[in-house]
Image (cartoon, rainbow, N blue to C red; front, side, top):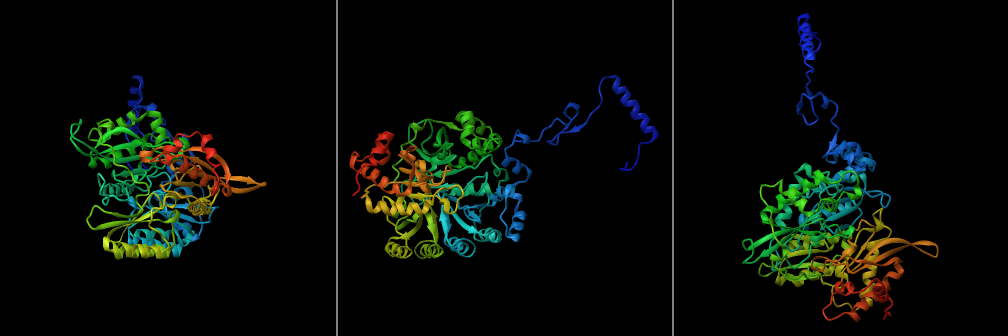
Length: 585
């Protein structure tokens, strides 16, 4: 029967008789199709299926989730090309979706895009750094920033150049796919993975494999909220793994324990230091080759169960707060073809000490006769000629490999011992030092109001000024970490600094000035501590002598071998405030 044909008289009589008989038996036959594609004979199901996103009604979704439901950000490349052709910045839903390509509309701070890349484990090649320099020079603001996720950002990209930048990244063997919005961010790993003589396991292959798994798994985009993963090989150099949503860290099990001796991984969950929480060990032990499957299963549990109605409660922390670690682990296990080994952390061997600022300077590699050189990049800012210079040195004296760190610095590995001095001299001509300066080596700053609409101060400029001042005023003899962040998002992770600062506007003689609230006593890894607020809303002009006095007070009052974190933990807020009264030189 075609669409325009009608029933014959005989067919009509048959159907009338059929339904009359069915009616006498008390039912009317029904066939319907549900939203998942299955068929039903239950007429009560008709129209009862409400559209949902992983069980949440579309009516209850927050604004950003509705945008994602209406159109996946990965399907907006043609839209981006349209904006580029019109030389126009996107707005509203499109502004959010285009973050899937690592592009951020940062107006009004800058009427332009910021580009955030993906560099797995922070490892890149000289030709890629050359290419980044070219992009910074031709299409961005003439500089690049190393980030606290061992990554690069380019700023001041005009809309007309946005597609050119993305295409150039791909030509270089890089990408920015999923570097923004509610996606898995750049995968970090121990910067000395495969180089460190003290490491337990080389985690760089895991970071790279995780990177490619994300790029090739569509369901890993459009999470309830952004998600960070880190791999720590158990060596001497920190990657701040315990600040991540999932941290895999290598451990060694000795003889006589409940499992066979060897190298395994522990898993920490729900780090989010901007909310004053570190990732916590969840009690499981896995084989190295189980890390990726475990990560994928945990991501899927989060995708299916994270809060999509309230963005303020959408990070992994809040799902685990509601469920507890045990339920989260159990739900993860259901998605795997192996069981977790439940094992107390005490059965693992104690980790060797982590060396603060240990990535800076010259250090022998596990490979005989080779060294890595840690280069101090002030607050992560590099100019194109400096980028080309580092690439040239990496090619000439190493293998062309460059490694970025979460401390906004970089390493040049595989330098032979006889070439070290020459390489350092050439690095100096670029304006960079390689010494592990106790103050400048741990100075971290976000972009600040120079390029971010949320920030209240020019954090990078203030950090450089503060560092130079402290170097002159304080004879520091032990590594100290000072973090300046521009807003509550804590991109510079101010709560883990020995001294952390969050910018605020303060009134001075009735006028707005840049200022900071100061937190003291933060630490990470084996010195894990959330800094406590000691000073509120202090003008930056007063910050410099204030911090100098605190550091001098520590040097004067500390016990032998006592770190700043240990010192601050014993002091009340009032006692720490009193340190600011220590006289200047």
